[in-house]
Length: 329
Length: 258
Ligand SMILES: Cc1cc2nc3c(=O)[nH]c(=O)nc-3n(C[C@H](O)[C@H](O)[C@@H](O)COP(=O)(O)OP(=O)(O)OC[C@H]3O[C@@H](n4cnc5c(N)ncnc54)[C@H](O)[C@@H]3O)c2cc1C
Ligand SMILES: Nc1ncnc2c1ncn2[C@@H]1O[C@H](COP(=O)(O)O)[C@@H](O)[C@H]1O
Image (cartoon, each protein chain N blue to C red):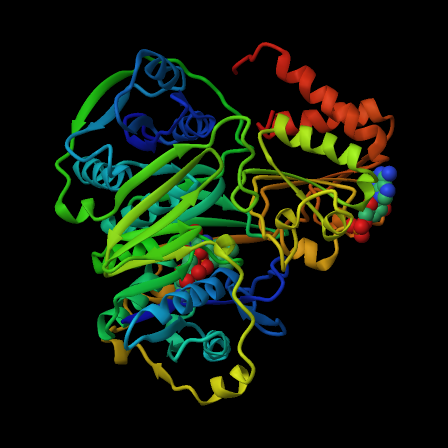
C-alpha cells in the first residue's frame, strides 16, 4: 500500500448530511491510500468536518455552469479528469442508481475494469480484490481488475465505520461541461416528504403483512411500523383478498414486484409467487408462527412467534430507540 | 421509428446460480428465461408503437446458441425481429466487452431509441445500458419507472426512496427500465406461433467488425479469482416477544435501518 496514492471517492449528501455510505467508502478507501473526495456542489463546514473525520484531506467540490442541472455528467467528467491527471489506486462509488451509472461511464471512458456491488474491497499485490455476493446469497465471488484503474461500486450496509481524523480542505474544481454532457436534463426533483409513504415498487424499506396478521386492527399497527421505518406498506395476496390492504399494494408476481434494501414480511407464508416478487431484497426479515413457512428459506433473519405479541413489542422497541438521542460512530 | 431492445437470457430461478470450474455462470442443466426487466423493456416499446409510423422493434441479444430463446420470447411479446450475436470467443465477457459488442451492433442498425432492462437478475450490474450510451455518445436515462415519448423528446420518471426525479433527453437515446414500470401485458393469442416465423439474424464477431481481442475471457478487464459456496447465514429466533423484538431491532440498527 502506498500512502500517497490518491483513492477517488464519490461522496453523497442526504438531506445535506454526508451519507453513511460515503463514510463507509472513506473507511475502505484508506486501505489503498489517501482518500480524495469528489462532491457535486459546495461543501459546508459540517460536511468538511465529517469528511475530515473519515480521513479525507482533499474535497474536490464541483462547480461551473450546468453542474447543478447535470450532476451525473459532472461527476463522470470530474472523476475522469482527476484519474487521468494522477492515476488513483482505485475509484470507489456507492452502489445506488447514480453510482452505478457514473461508474459504468467512467469505466468506459478510462477503459478500466468495473466491479459492481462489492461487499468488501481490499488491496493485494494485484491491486484491488473485491468480494461480491451474487443474488441468492449462496456464493461469494472474489474478483480483481486486470486492466486500468479499478472502478468499484460498493454496497456498504455491512461495512463498519472507522474514523481517522484529518483536516479536510475544500478544493473547488471548475468544470466546463461539454455539450454532450448536457444531453440529459433534470426537469424536476422532489424529495419524498417525510411521513408520506414511498411507492411500494421503489421503496428502500417495505413492511408487509399476510393472513397471519389476523385482523385489520393489527394490520393498521403494521402500517405504523412501516411509517416508523420510513417504509412502504404492502400485503400478500391473502391480505388484499381479506380487504386489509388495497389491491395496488399487493406484493406478488402479478401485483407489485419490490426491490427494497429491507423487506419485513409479517405473517406471510411466502408462496412461490410471493417470493418471486422479492427477487433482490438487500435483507429479508420474516416473522411467522409456523417454523416451516417457506418465507424462512429466503429470510436473513426469521422469528417464529405470534404476531399479536411480536408486532406491538417491535413497534414499541423501534419507537423507544428512535427517541433516544442519535449517537454517531 | 426504430426501437432496439437489448435483452439477456438469465437463469429461471433467481437463486439458482452456480459456477463452472472456469468461474463462468453454469448453464448446463439449468432452465432459462428472458430477464424480467427486459420483458418490461419490450412492453414499453409496444406502448410507444401505436403512436409512431413505420415502427420496427428489433430485439438484440449477445449470448450462446441457446440465448436465441430469449429473442423468441421477446418476439412473442411483440418484437418484430431479432439479432443474435453468437461467437465462441465471447464466452467469459465482462460488462465492458458486452457493451462494446452491443454498441457495435447498434452502429450497424438504425435506431431512434434503445430500450434495456435496468439490471438483470443474474449478475445485475446495472452497467451495460450506461456503457452502451457512453460508447455511442447518446444520452442515457437509467432506472426509469415510467417512460413518455413526446415528438422528439423523451421523459422518464424515476425514484429511489427519498427523491423522485423527472429527466428529459432528445432522441436518439438509451433508456433502461425497472421491472416496476409495469408488468408486460399478456401476449396476443397466436403470438407464440407467429413469433416462430419472425426473422432472427445470427451475427459473428466478424459480422460486426470486431476481432476478438477485446472480448471474452482474454479481453476482460476484470477477472474472477475465486468462487466459494456460502450458504446465506440464516438465523431463526424464537422466545419471549420482548426479547425477540429487541433482537429484531438490533438487526435493523446493525443494518442502519434504525
Ligand atoms: C456473479 C457474477 C459477477 C460478475 N461480476 C462482474 C464484474 O464485477 N465486472 C464485470 O465487468 N463483469 C462481471 N460479470 C459479468 C457481467 O455481469 C456480464 O458479462 C455482462 O454481460 C453484464 O451483464 P449484467 O447482467 O450484469 O448487465 P446489466 O448491466 O445488469 O444489464 C442491464 C441490461 O443491459 C442489457 N444487457 C446486458 N447484457 C446483455 C446481453 N448479453 N445481451 C443483450 N443485452 C444485454 C439488458 O437490457 C439488461 O437488462 C459478472 C458475472 C457474474 C455471473
Ligand atoms: N397469529 C399469527 N402469528 C404469526 N403467524 C401467523 C399467525 N397466524 C397465521 N400465521 C402465519 O401466517 C401465514 C399466512 O399464510 P398465507 O396466507 O399463506 O400467506 C402462515 O404461514 C401462518 O403460519
